[in-house]
Amino acid sequence: MLGLLFGNLYTAVVVVLFFGLTIFIHELGHFLVARWCGLQIKAFSIGFGPALWSKEVNGVVYKIGCLPLGGYVALPQLDPNAMATVQGDGENAGAEEPLPYVAPWRKILVSLAGATGNVLLAIVLAWIVFLRGMPATIANQETVVGFVDTTSALYEQGVRVGDRIVSVAGTPVQFWSEFVQEAAMHDVVMLTLQQSDGALLEVEVETEPWQYGVRMVSGVEPLEPVVVDEAEPGMSAAAAGVEAGDEILSYAGVEVLGRGHMIDLVQVHAGRAQEMRVRRGTGADARELTVLVDAVEDAEVGHPRIGVRFRMPAQQLDTASRVHPRPMAQIRLHASAIFRFLRDLVRPRTSARAANMVGGPVAIIVYYFGMVQASMMLAIWFTGFLNINLAIINLLPIPVLDGGHIVFSLYETVFRRPVHPKVVNILVNLFAILLIGVFLLLTMRDVDRSPLGRRVRGFLDRDEVEEVQDMPGEGADAPLAEESNGDVGLD
Image (cartoon, rainbow, N blue to C red):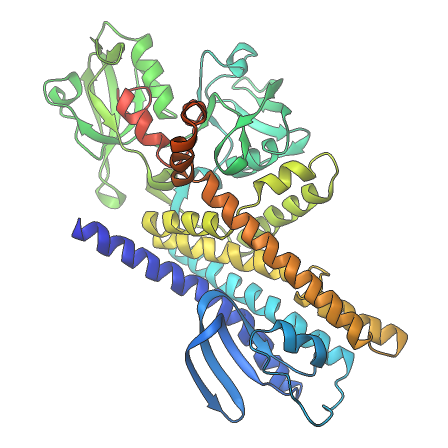
């Protein structure tokens, strides 16, 4: 229990540090360029609300707010009337003397500096991931199908293990994460797959509700490593010398592509001994072994087993290999994910689905926790992803965001006069209220969709919670349920 407590505390500290670094770099960009351009700076804050720490140096108040959900640099000359209301504590208010004029191009440079800082940080992090490497995940590997449920609509239409998903609704996909993202935009989706003989197969399938409001194609799983967590005493695998940590490479001469695939192979070849090839160890110490195992009927789970429990890979990690994605390829993938989402958000036929997929702060933190616990390099990769997303979103032409300030400055450049301060004040405050409202709405929705939220609803409506439990893959504890009933977790 104590180890679990310290482990969660460590994870929380790392998440705060990475998220704080993202905010700090963004605001540092504004700060440095504003100083270079000669703008007056009143405050530099990481976090909002009452200050946990503050210090004034050369007229600038540096502080850390108690709410680590953002930050700001108070720059009166960007917008003296509106910014005093929006940027926290009103450091800009009360100026008795007119502020020196600032050319629009200087304002634009300052507004762009925050996003530029995030992009530069993302590039640095991408180089770290490239040089150090990170565990391979299903999300950054190809779209090979590792398991197909024989009772699914996909199997009935001819989809088989080893097929490669080429496109989703006409959009080409290269990685499993792209397949998931594109499929989630549709109630019914057309998939194009390349089969082992090179032929193309088109299938149409309905998507089903999944966690956090996302829809998914059920009955199909990606290529994944099959690692033994335990070889049960008295069963065939243990007798053959299989050990925890062994990765199963093939069974009965067939390459194993996933846990579900392995279970199918065992059942197909039950009743006679079969060769199973495993990899033991990692790196230079890795070696391959071939053992002879025999599947016997297990009355408790209702199908033949060789007696191994599969390790549930944290974030579906391939512990036997590391990938070294090129830095700019990482940046392109990060950017394409947010651009695809924004594209779907403005399309009438996909806007509702895209809005339903938006994750709020709770979802981001939960995902961040999983990344840190799985691998520090994955957490660094995800921090790069967040920085690119923050840069792009901040440049949207919305008042209160950096993009809104750029629009105001462009207006001043074209019409030779600034936007009237009252107009700016109204727009900034209106969009600030809307932004806070969306933030609170997403937070409440994240909590409601979380396993804790479903348990709370269960006290109010027992029938509803039973319906949720029947949904495929719903909730963070779904893999544990699968492991306990023997469908996926053991063989």
